[in-house]
Length: 310
Ligand code: PSU
Ligand code: MN
Image (cartoon, rainbow, N blue to C red; front, top):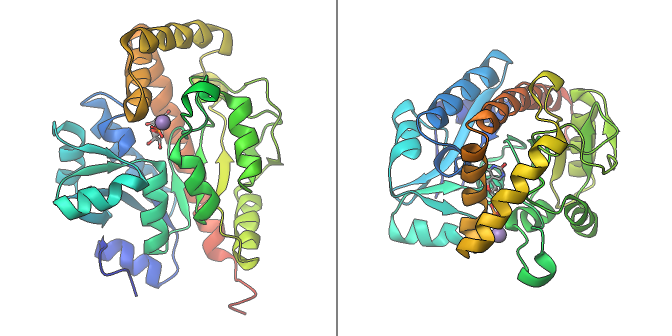
């Protein structure tokens, strides 16, 4: 039975009941990660890609205080354009629910709601992580905490170098979260295939990812799985090129004294400004790529019988 607080569309509920592949999608990327109208175009296209690859998309958000799993075209438009949609991580969930307001869910909050609905695979662009200078600021994304306690596989293009990638990988190790990199020996840095950090584990197919997710579940592990899917070569912005731009965005962040939950949205927007939109093009390309891979993972996972089921 689904959780009584969740509103799940019939399409998603039917697929889950029949054990057909379902892919969760987040909404902070729509409301706070990209400008309008590219954000709603991206959200709509990504749902279509998931469908074309044989899975049912379930975009997740909180609307009028109701956690929703599966959204309509109008819902996506609202999230993309409404001025008053809060960025909602796990700590914010009880507030938007109690107050009956709108919330765009981060990776952390989307993972939690996906798990409550019984969805195991989630596709996004980039994960939150340990921010640069976290030794002083303590700014570590709640995405990492959630990955340690919620069994959902999150397909992303890695983490941006607005974060400290090395410390993020260390934190994931401490938190007991498996980190897989698809088709590469290097952990990717969102806009770029390279980061200077080795892949903790390389996998070369969606089936391999599904087998790891299945094994974690069968072992009763609480944690999620990070699935880093490097941006295709033809879409990447080389690390040295984006590096200077990220430094500038970080300097602007410091100068303006922006911190806490506003830091990531500010940096994403600033990078789009400085690159004149080139970073947005790369961002959209990598989300498409992740949608294809995530749908394939969900398909392989649905095809695997658990020893518990057999
Ligand atoms: N990184 C991106 N794009 C995004 C985000 C991160 O490249 O849209 C969003 C995701 O929703 C992620 C959140 O969960 O930012 C992390 O925010 P914070 O750093 O405040 O935890
Ligand atoms: Mn933070």
